[in-house]
Length: 129
Image (cartoon, rainbow, N blue to C red):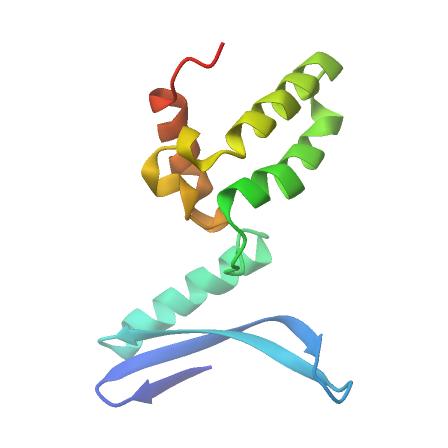
């Protein structure tokens, strides 16, 4: 859906469905606005739908980076790495639970922005051995 709000254009995409408090299914929508022209909004809408279709859309959440790494990323990597590598990752996660070991921006960053931050952390982290 693409609509005009005031002087700018806004679009929405359906990201899924969820039950409300009355056990009725409701559509989950993601809105994005502020596009100066309808053409710009249509282009951004097409890109967002494409990302959603490829599975690249990440729903914003309040999960911290440390929670994401420990609760989602680490278990997902277990099937793809050697046991010793996984054990090393677990050991590193225990040390990384301490926010003072992270660059200052990492302590509060949400998981949607993790990749650039992980690369930065790999360059800046102190030698922990």
